[in-house]
Length: 252
Image (tube, rainbow, N blue to C red; front, side, top):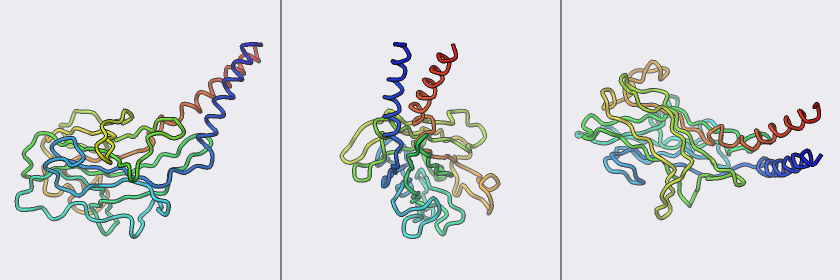
């Protein structure tokens, strides 16, 4: 009986925590900024693109929003194209290589936080890039800070590779949950290191029209996910496990 009461008390604590985290909440207004260059940093060297943004705004939808989304991330290649490049590829937007992609706020539901997925982040290098690595830095700012936790539960961010040139043999998934340095208003989330192998240095990573599976000819491609799906379900799985324990005790 004492053990059963202890289990019930634990369930009460977990349930209270989980309901607190999963009420009618939304995480309304934040951004993650992204820069590619020859080093990890908030303003990396040899970066050939404008800072990218993945974020949520109170008035945004998960589609294209006039006045929020778009804006060209990379201009025409200069005569000496020495920069590392990154852009959201949006074939049906006016700005195909887009800088901003905002979505509707994160929803905190009774069983989980619904992840947001930003697809088709392209990373490549200009044909005159002089380095053997590209570093892609992900960070947020104190002015529009991405959630580092939701009701005490740490939020993880995931970068998932979906395309790489032939010959790539490195990692295909990165999870950021141990946040790094703070510099002024910038907060480091994490970074991705990519080798400059054949197929990464291209004037344009896209050739022709149609789906990326048929038209991407160079560089890398990624999805960016937050919260990383497993990171917000521990409380739910804990409650489920304890309920199973009670059921087993009752049937014993």
